[in-house]
Length: 126
Image 1 (tube, one colour):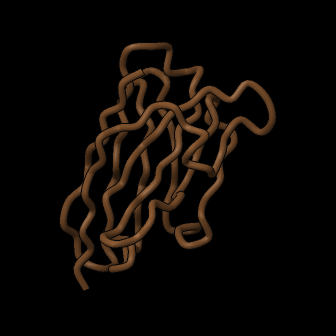
Image 2: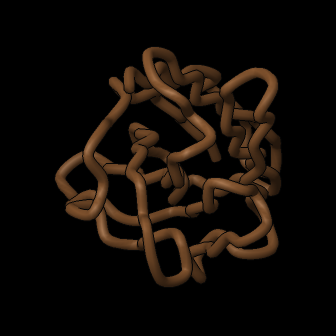
């Protein structure tokens, strides 16, 4: 499956952005999707994940209550709605996909994902 992330940009602190991850090439409904981010000079970190059905999800504590992950099966798209943005949210955001055949249907571990998008830059100015 090919993933295309978009929606990044420059926003003031306290503002909102919605990232999109559009999939093509395979049956996207089989895949869980995770969002990860990497700030300059820092390691990649988990942000949020959603299972293939869209009824189970998990957030990093740093974004819980501010970010919302969702998916639109008809559009083969997963969204990350980001609100109350802070300067520390500045990073390149990546979406990733994988099939999880057992367990809870998603993972917080980046190395559990097989397919990655190219990343979209989010810059939050203070």
